[in-house]
Length: 407
Image (cartoon, rainbow, N blue to C red; front, side, top):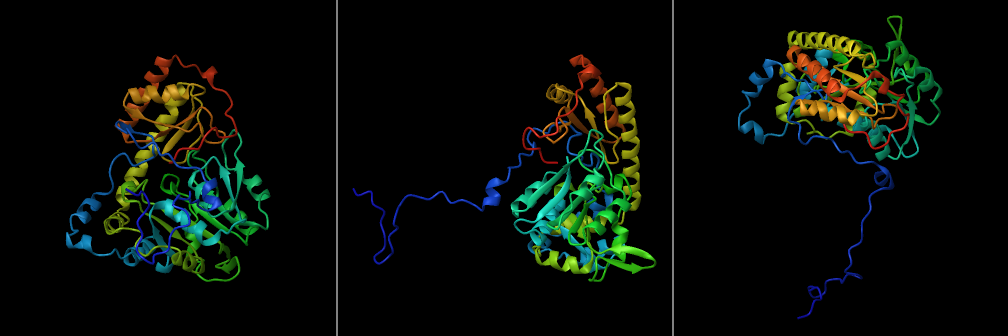
């Protein structure tokens, strides 16, 4: 029997029946692949900076009102964007809901970056910046923080060039917990009027400082700065936020972008009209007005963070000051053993040693009071089991040894 491929009469024959290894764009080939450590997360989740409690009780009530017929309808984003905008004191056209901050970053890069443009940000930070900017063929300009892990403000300013198209400022920063002042953000925006300034405020609630209020006046296109009420208001700033952290909706994947109307019009064209599902939209509308719950949860995080920092100091474990819902500590060369010792005690923590400048570092998420107590006790037991000594801690390396893990 012939092994030749049968063809219909008159159909064109392939020049070769050998399949070609089809390659993607060069920028995609050069991109690293994410490997989120999601498997086997059985235990107390102090590893991903998630809300370890629950979202507002209003979410359950709202989800209970969703009918089976509701699942057959395409989601309508605009009404909820109007609710969110009102909560933020903005116009509806200034807000775009996204599939978490991950998509927000992607939309900004997709909208504004071309091949050869420079994307400037400090490291260590959120690895999605690298992935999305590289995917557009942009040149990554990473500015390494020093041993204090404070935001390298002066070196960021010095790194701005005519080719700088996007500057990403993360405050508070993940995984360090460092912050950037409003004055510093404005100075950077003024120094780069030709660039978009994306301020990632995913952990905003745990610190409180924000530039979101500046967007109230930044509603008209024009020069990078306008004079209103005696204040220079930047016109090139975008703000990204998430509903995954304080609001506790990580599983539903909702974030937002806010900014001047002219920039938001460009971003909206680059966004899918159905990127946020109806269940997520209902949850957002329900929880965003529950300020009593958010105030309570944030207070729990502040108190828990202080307890963890005090415990680490008592155990002489080096740490960095944090303004988020986590604490970064320096364990040293035996960081992997420490992570395993914590897992053996049913506590999940995150090894951040692959990040630039963080060799030997581990991050611990703040939980509710009883969870903080469990985490601190596990810390003591794990370090004691290892016979860990403060003298083991050495200066972190400044280059990553492998692709950083997500979140």
